[in-house]
Image (cartoon, rainbow, N blue to C red; front, side, top):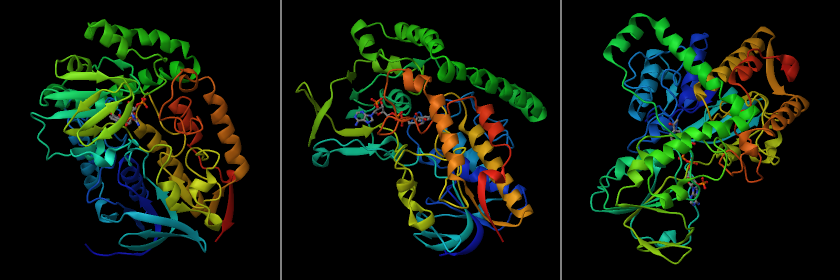
Length: 487
Ligand code: N01
């Protein structure tokens, strides 16, 4: 691969929904002097990396796609991972952004020096006036610290780094974790494995999955009348937006919604002992609400054991739990999620005076509108702090941020500016507002711990309000919120 370096007006990092969306919009707005740095050899981000069997979206596809690139060909209402990966490849090519992408360019560091960003990659150095991070929070697997794991003789891998070489038939497999990923791959591997030992630390709330195939006739209608698909997208958007009332405003509503999940559990799990193990003791919504019709049936099969005792240690041949029982296994699969509040980008990006994001965030991850950070001039972060969602499509938030960044670039050009840096007091007031809105949410009051919270228990990941409110706030870049430096 050609080694490349050089100066560009804008450097974007990552080619998931965030980086690709940013690149398309830059191109459409007439910017040409930009590159997108990607560590892998193809686009797709988390949808490229997560290839575990059963992986699919748990947000309806008509909404989980770019507003500017509807896809009339989704095969079902909740699309499988390969289709989403293909969709991102197709958008990349259709909108002509592939020539801007530099594959195999893992970013090692980015420093603000002499009024520009100096970005070191494993293949060379780039400089840029603006740096946009599209390194999403679901990119770096989180591995549990298990005593003795290095002594284990079998295969060990994470759900985001699936070992497709492994033939599960006749194998005894341990799965650690029962989150969004595990509840998708457990039903897929259960029929193949000889024994499945499922280590559950906290049971998730699971709702029925109202998935269905999209018929050829429907696809033809969407192709011929794009407005029909747009109308469905709107309907999905608003019906999901109504859920914010329960998540963020009146968590008591969630206890009513919980009844649907309780019924689902009761209906699918007949054994009262197993049902007790699977019944959460916190309010629905406190952790991400999962949807599945095949998880409970899979774990009632005779080759599955749900283990709720804490893992004490790993030996060369299995896992020992706190009750002293040894579970002999050939393979261990981590379904243990991602480093969401301990992002690698925190050690990578250094702003004014060499201060890293980790240092700037000693009081928790924070950014103005989840996008701009005081002390980090000309830096924008897609899917930054408190832009995550539990109820609807992240693509909506990403597109809001992209529009904000484009408006920032226009404002900068129109006013002949060289640097913009959000004012510390503006960021502080915004973050105080977010933290105060968080007090009444189900994520704070629901009685659980979750990956939404950082080590200090602060929710620095989720947007605590309606997503249309976020869109309103990001509609215009107001230069009064920023310290600016003229050309
Ligand atoms: O990870 P998770 P995931 N010992 O963090 C357990 C997105 N996603 O990969 O609940 C034992 O949800 C942990 O237990 P506990 C989506 O945003 C989207 O499943 O912390 N167990 C939990 O059960 C999702 O939320 C789709 O007590 C340990 C599990 O591992 C996010 O990705 C599909 C442990 C981790 O669950 C992450 O999902 C799939 C330990 N040391 C994923 N550490 C869509 O469809 C962790 N656990 C869009």
